[in-house]
Amino acid sequence: MEKKQYDLCLAVLRRLHGAGVLDGMIMIGSWCIPFYKEYFIGIKYRKTIRTRDVDFLIPAPLSFKKNVNVPELLKDLGFVIGYKGSKGYITLEHPELLVEFLVPEKGRGSDSPIQIPRLGINAVALRFLHFLSENTVKVKVDNFHLALPHPAAYALHKFIIFKRRRNADKHDRDIKGALRVFRALITRLGSGLHISQYKNSEM
Image (cartoon, rainbow, N blue to C red; front, side, top):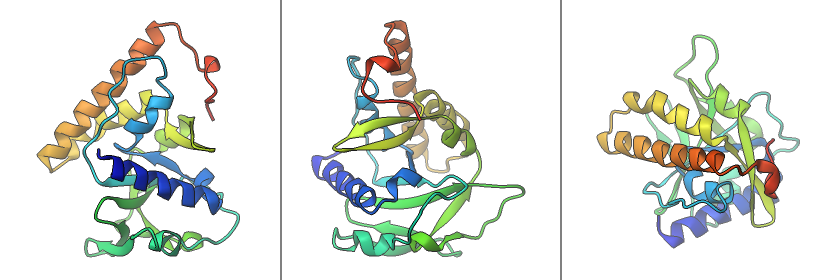
């Protein structure tokens, strides 16, 4: 992860927070790793990653109180709308980052995009996301809080899905990232540190 990638991701988070919609999202995927550093304070933890993909989970029910056109919100940061696959899944693309929105899959599922008109986007429905939204922590970033899956939920999710990866490089990154987070969590628990000792709080 280069500094310019991190700075751009931080700019995206600031925009979403300023627009009042970040509280209705959970960052998931590999970009959680650098932000877990705020959860693993006092523990040796390697926070570097190697991916452009920034994923946001939007749990149900939606909690957005106003309409915010997210593509327009991020446009002057250099993001443009892209479409993924034959179904037209929206991604927000930048040379440094690719932002995508996900929702938990329900019932038999669907391969069609899930429309989220309040944000001006659609989202990909995937399985195994419910327990990420049900087990979260909040970490302090700048002057706001960012919701992430609890590290245990993050690692378990990666262990579940890694075999579904077609890309061998992503497969390896999933396993290495999950092990890194899991080991840091074990160290944290073994040290006797508790969440109450930090300014960050669980949701």
